[in-house]
Image (cartoon, rainbow, N blue to C red; front, side, top):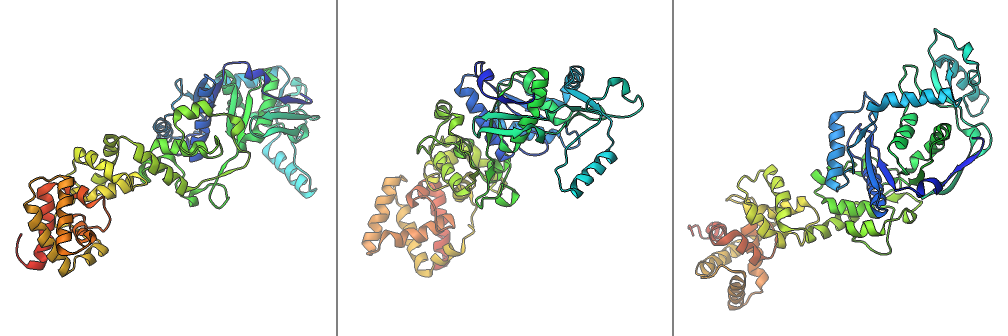
Length: 484
């Protein structure tokens, strides 16, 4: 391959097959989740297949918990593979077989250069202020000269003249001079394959037609093409997506907040459809559409609409999206999601049915499941209630006196229904010549221990007659010194 190109021609005529290939060295990164999403959508849009591969060749860092976390995160987002996942390490013999084929057909060679010799040459290049390139005397050595008792690595024979152009779905045409590509190692001295070899072999054997991944792999594509051409395999279509940056424009890191999908779900209370929608819009768009369903995403998604510039992660936008999806979500489902958070916060006597009943009035103001849990906490609080500082300030002697009057008035309410309670308290405020807020504010404090809550009449209905009157009476007692 003195010169050449990689374009969409060969693979485009075949049924589309994409893949997501994470390394299981930690949680499912938010950037990885977006890569999986784009691969899933591209395959769905074209009626193709979306496959998963676990690149677990780094045995020291690959762990079972990390593998489980990746599968768990993908399942939560609805991005399971269409077939059982391929595990790269299990295919090591196949990778070594391809290395042997490349040796046999003259596209690779045994290199006996020692680490010390390489270090000396690298040092010399630095001193001479020139780029270091592998120039091994073993590249064209006759096999009969190979030492029998010396360890070696297998290197590919990268082209030394001309240039290679990749027509990328996102980056457009990208050209690299072949002299910039080293004779990189494909098989280590212990006989194990390198990442660069394993990726190419697995993509080929899995029938991958489109390699869609982060643009930090763009340089790898030119190296991988050396192996592909050496084996005479079809070149996949490439699409290298710009990485996600933080709000300050720097590469996304832990200092920008949560990085793992599990943190958005467990710690931040984000719904999967909200994160799906947000990641979709992070570097891709369809006009001015902000809220995009899975069905719409499959219909509209095209790699041509992926931007060439890095996108910036904006937590406020994600929270706004999440608030939208909370309001759209089924109340029973939300109750199931919120209940464990209340139990974790120490509320022992919870009621799933009551929680679901409260969701219509709780979810209108919440941006995440944590806020929903906080908003619902008053329903299950034990008496005596704990009061916020602001709520305590509302419970003046004058306010407690009004609570005593409210208690007396509501005790005779024949129907504990929202409309009847609203009419009763409004009539009371009118009789006293007060705005309704003068009654509602201390009443909210007495019922919830907070100054913010759902509408006060919703609170009364949700708590029920007995609990509402008991909470009002407990605060009225403090003013009268008697027991109501």
